[in-house]
Length: 431
Image (cartoon, rainbow, N blue to C red; front, side, top):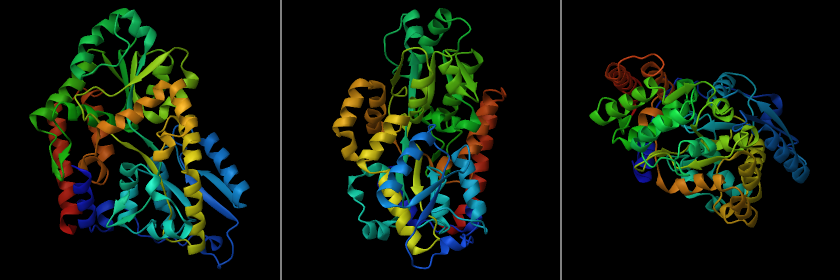
């Protein structure tokens, strides 16, 4: 689906609460949040600190306070995007609302559908945000019915990380595999040269295996869906599922609930993981590693990560102050700082050409991979990002065919049937 088709879907969507399982914007927030027209002295930001970013977030918020005089209370809203979304959803039913809340590629849309977060376009004008400076594709990921509901913040693609000493021991060239077929050829050599070490490790279904496998299934010619039609049982999709299962059964691909630690401890020769893991791996890995595009042929890579949103049911004064904060966190200098600290992509176009960023990329070529790979990414499948619970449902299915050893066709058929039921029950009547 090209970006125009995606925006057309968003413009046609008119879903209700039942479609997404969220409460309407029922929260009233605190008395302080209601505001009386006076100056805002304190803001609250909810984050799950993607990419172990709490230290740099705190640094940037302190700088915002120094510049504006507005203090910011940084709250850990959960250990994952889903936990942050659950906490925000609970607050909509009457709890105390934050002023800024992080929302992932699959959670912002549900909140926008339910008027739980604020359209930003008028706020951009009020605060003077240079929205044209953001990477177009990342900014437009948050468009719905002609309005924008977030600004890109911690944005990423999956990357292929590889242990260079293990690669050398296997006699492999200093690059990632160009295709999954090439990985299958290399895996036995990696296993033989590095005994008791998995040639590759990927996160399990509760840690976004559905995101990583989405790229793999595309390279086989399959997909989770063709717009709203599930395509799990197409021959190409089944072939991709059987390939994953076969690689797991041969111990060429390991499934882990802490894949970063396994790779960082040199217990796996390669890793599929977010761009945002680059900063942490630089600190923990005691060996030289490289980064590469995900195996092709392209497009075999989705985008992902999170943006920053503003709750709908806070005062106008707080909304403007929150918009100032988001604009500050994502300005050129600060997206460079955040990118260097975490590995996430800089979200502004001019940041890529910033002298500090240019020098950083020259010294850290691993960080350049995600920027170059952005050119061969593709929009995500509806079944993962628009169907309620899609990512979690697919991830659980992938765990079943790997860790659980279940039949691929049976599991994928059930995924297709469940996706169709969710669509017919929650979405089709509202389109």
